[in-house]
Image 1 (tube, helix red, strand yellow):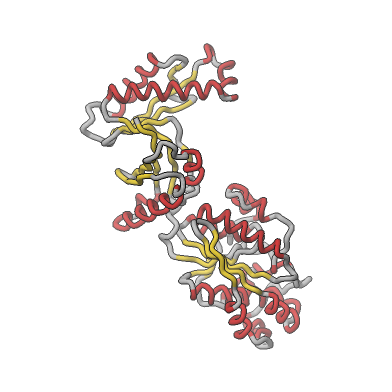
Image 2: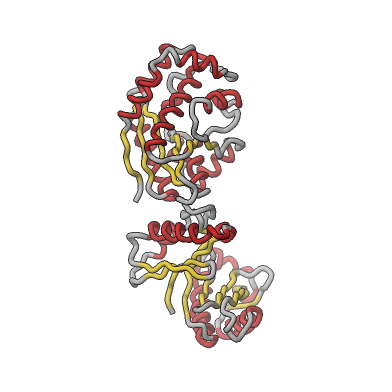
Length: 406
């Protein structure tokens, strides 16, 4: 009997002739995720991926915590791999269930259940899948016979097929895999299967969530941050680096481009009317991000904008912002309200970092009454007061780039 990790994937199954490309990328991302935990063999068969440690000291707990963040994985289980012989299956199943029942009984929930249930018994059922058609028993018969054997040979069990305390799973393939737990992951598509996007990463709640959502659709992420020192502090920069590190747990390695934006913002503040400060600033950011994207092979820009959330995110303002660039702009939060975004931010562990009280460049030089229905012609007229092209070029030239994550 060998302890391994079984990985399930879902949407990839629908990819037709392109499916091997998605599977190969997922396996690549899995290997990257578990690197450093010990030598492993990663293989796939019959819509399953198997991670088999080749060292006894493999850190399963750390591996699971990393793998649940690998996009493309629907769920995973720590399983026991045994020979596809029914007597062998029964023997190892009894050992595994005995250990699982003891663990349940020792847990707080298990202790409560022992008080509530007559005799303190733990309920279970068996679910079987027979992928190996040469195996002599069909799935229902495996479940029935194995369930009876477990009931007879493991103390403290009772059968409940409708609402069991746990399900014992059996997958009979070339080998047989037995397990008690299914650990959910984030699903999606493997990062690296949908091109590369350049995320405009502020220190707020929204943009990290936007980057996470596009990575979940398979997009490789690079990020650009606009730093207005000394109007924004070094702590604000460190905060963004911390957010990029959290995102890298899902996205893999991220190249983070820190753009010096002080000169540009001061020029905008000095030469453009107050109502257009924010929209001109956004157009400048998009122009700089597009140029950095072109230099790094990104095919789209990603922002955390949501329709109507602030004055610069009206439909009219977004249209004027879009006009500044030719790359597509992805806004995955566009139809979400703040509570929905916060819920995701909490789930992916960016929220507590995002609310640290260090201002970003979007919160300085803000007009009291920004224009909510700006016009492209007026924006271009005000931009003509600036040496816009040279300001963009200098900002890109002086950009600091760092690599975040393994």
